[in-house]
Image (cartoon, one colour):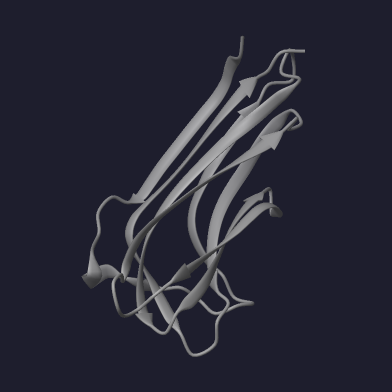
Length: 142
């Protein structure tokens, strides 16, 4: 049976809003979307895992952008995924959801950050919301 060690969640953008859109920066630049802090206790916390889930509302503005979403723990990349975002045709608005599992995290306080970057020249995609990011740290069976 798993035991909860810590949990955290943020929702920096709660709704879809075109008027407050943010352009996703071109690589190698990154747009920081959300940050949470998870604490792993010193005693009786191994083995463990941190389950991370993010949802980002994105709108295609020009071309077909390839957006790289990344999750960092304490500034070190632990996960990434790539999502194509169209700007014309059948779809323009997307709610991109992804999850990652960080295993056997050392004791202490850890900062997890979600970022996005546009990897395709001459395209544009914007964050239009909502944006949510959550983490659940659990002790797993030995």
